[in-house]
Image (tube, rainbow, N blue to C red; front, side, top):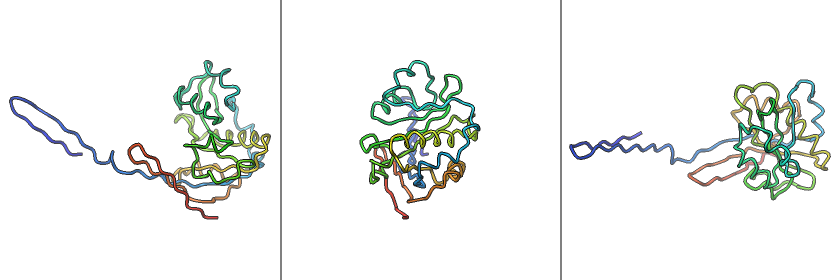
Amino acid sequence: MDVLRLNNKFFYVFINFNLNNYLPKVAIYNIYKIQNTQYSNYDPQKNKNPILNLNSFNINKFINELNFNITKKKQFIDNINNNLNCCVVLNKKDIIHENWFSLSLISNKNFETWCDFINWKLESTCGNARTIEMFKSKGFYSASLSKIFKFLISKGKINTYLSVKKNNKIGNLSLIKFNPSIIGIGYKINFLFIKIYFLKKII
């Protein structure tokens, strides 16, 4: 951080410039493919918290009953109105875990865009799972994935593609029970107001 001071009897000015705010930031993800039938590898008895799939058909029923503690309420509704679905884990009325998923190319816009190439009649995407800090390591990620996979089977979806940050050890380990295959490495580059997604396929 560079600080410039101009000081005399007339004025005193601070200029604070942090170059790091203007440099590109790169996040690296493992891109997985999972057969939705693998939901059966998770024991639902491990999770006692209510789990809901929220979408454009039922959001109005819950919108004023839930506390949106992760994604802000307005953004949450915007995502739903853009045809994204969200599996949430609740603690009373508080949303303590979110896991988003897409069933179509249209709703996948600005979501898991490195997976636009998939067969949308039979496949889907999942991502941007987040848990409130004090509730981490309680199995909510596995629980929400299992519910999502089961729901997707009812919609005729065979496979799901999802991303987990490469340095997220717990998230990557949580997927082992679902027998995933890594199909590529994803790179997300943030530069000012621009986001660039790049996929390096492995298989």
